[in-house]
Image 1 (cartoon, rainbow over the protein chains, first blue to last red):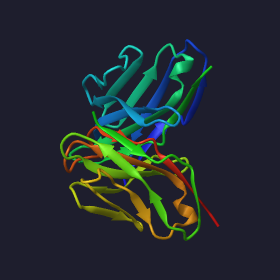
Image 2 (cartoon, each protein chain N blue to C red; image 1 turned 180 degrees about the vertical axis):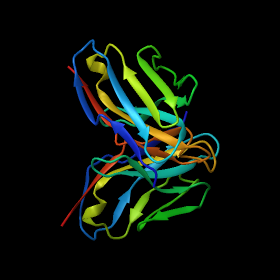
Image 3 (cartoon, one colour; image 1 turned 45 degrees about the horizontal axis):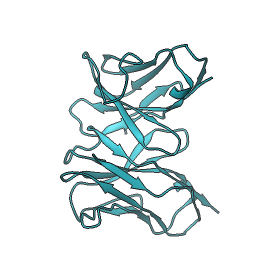
Length: 115
Length: 116
């Protein structure tokens, strides 16, 4: 099956700094990528949908200026958590949909801890 | 809005035991239903899906039937193996047929541990 690589798998950063998470489709081109976050014992919540070459669509309640999404190519989307705070500590997961396809493939997730 | 409720884990079973992970949903319209599995250190993988009422999805010995009357999509397997140890997510999409590529609403996930 198609492979989506997410990097890093774990990151610890200091409060006030920014962290970038990468999501790459390794063997296919992805027109659409999705970013989710998951708090302990809670559901995966969709944060935003990004389409290659255009602005991301954010879900209600997600701060655009805090969670910057860039989908500059058909194989790479990045999520930057700006001025991170401890409450941003969470598990972030991306998924990518192949051009013309209807199934999305998931990365392995990134555990972010802000101290 | 849409929501998915699944049983809390962890669920610990002995090898060859019968598995049921309950999943119920709330949705407007006629959603598609999915089970995803996440093995340690890997991304979520689609395990099975059903797109309409009474459909049964099956894969790798796992089954789930779309029950509209009870708004449920319980995951079952007759004989689990140690290699089935993973986290299982129930999810729905309000787009018929094309679930994975559209907005998915997930349950909290249920960790399954299978011991020898």
